[in-house]
Image 1: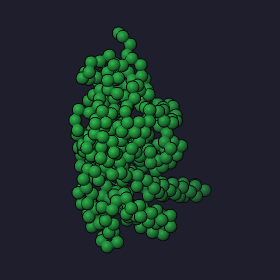
Image 2: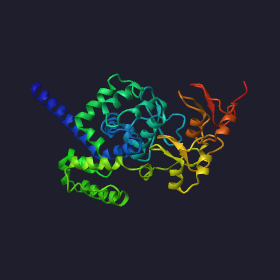
Image 3: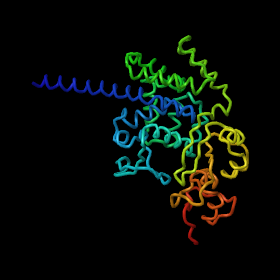
Image 4: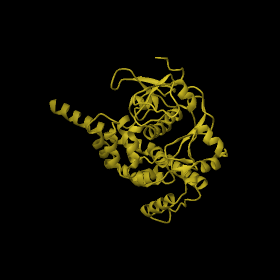
Length: 354
């Protein structure tokens, strides 16, 4: 009887492991495209994003992923005004963000890394150096687990996620098919690939689709060369414009160094207005800058905010969509004065007199 019980246990454990592998493979097949989309917009390695998603969600099985579409365990923070859910993580019943769909979670993860000073140095790293990015995330304090970097690297190498660092949204389905050749019998997957191919031809005519005539590796080299040769206006072609939670003003995050003239031409808004809306002192815009296409609000949508390392009053005014002059006035600060790290910045009402 004991031998039978032991055999059952072994088979159960083996089945559980095989099911976990299947779950993680399915997660990769489903969400690799989102990781590659974010890589193109924010220059975060797709392998890193996908490995973090795999780890955070347990292959898509976590409560946060299934009930809140939250794939990266991002907590509410002061600037979140969307839906929320309670979940026990570092402490009981902590507040976590809830998204309408997983793609929003992937995008918010990119914005989280791109707009916080802790992670600035990550963007100086070679984009395809997933090992450096993994160790950089740990060093920047993304996770408390001392083995976090090694776990990410293990995921990437186990599933060959580095393949996605060498592809584009046009070709991501080919990359998936390369890793999972059995999908050529999956009618739904092949239909998605065909649709993606059609969309790519319609929206990106400057990048030739020549997979059928060349090897996969050679095709990727050709695509990489063409992408690298694109000008700033071309890279800005598919820029994502969103409505700011403070009043709904339209804004976007600059994906590549550019200038006001390029933005003006793209959106049909005068350079003078863009400079005015964003209270700029220069015509140059840097990667990860926040740019508004409407006039900012006179007040914030949250009460206060603690200034982070390296943040200026202009940074804060852009982050929360508040006119810089109003921000100075609310905090009884002189124009040009900058906040101290940890200083409480008032966003709605005026700072009380001391």
